[in-house]
Amino acid sequence: GESVGLHLPTLSVQEGDNSIINCAYSNSASDYFIWYKQESGKGPQFIIDIRSNMDKRQGQRVTVLLNKTVKHLSLQIAATQPGDSAVYFCAENRGSNYQLIWGAGTKLIIKP
Amino acid sequence: KAGVTQTPRYLIKTRGQQVTLSCSPISGHRSVSWYQQTPGQGLQFLFEYFSETQRNKGNFPGRFSGRQFSNSRSEMNVSTLELGDSALYLCASSEGGGNQPQHFGDGTRLSIL
Image 1: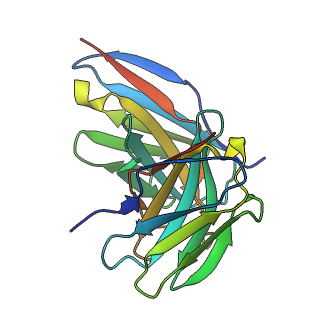
Image 2: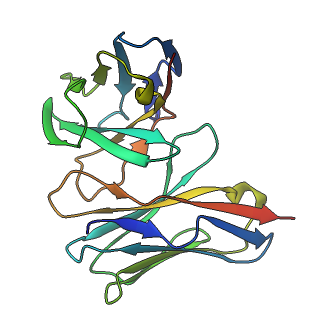
């Protein structure tokens, strides 16, 4: 089927540790992937994206890894801070299709 | 540069009424997409517009419609409201759609009584 799924609905991480949020996708034709952060009462905020011709992309404190062999995407957040508490979504797009397919979301909880 | 602006932020309607939501995209962005977000279904794609043309449509009934104006501003309309239409409606804009980041507004929270 066509879906983007998340392995864990909730992830608790100690402040200062690294966080890893995982996402699986099923359509090998997907060529663009994107991560969003959504805080309570706000719309999703763009974090980082990656195209299928790349395996890794880094931003400020975040890294996205793409494994096309197993259709797996991950978001790594370094030195997690309280402000990182949010729901994180992965989404995919397939070429000329002007529609993002969204995962269910992972809630990241930061423990003090 | 101002972000995506959605109005109103909150709206309360009763069953059978109709509603129009508005979205002003980031300046220079020509693609506008609409999503419905509910706790049970996550983000569901409604439709996407580019240069006043609908390029893609999700699996929603015909009660849900939209349009885009020449200045890229967009509206969506829901007619004959049902209780299940209660949701957060999100608008996102991008330069051209497709493989480009979409930038979201904070949504319109629609409650149906």
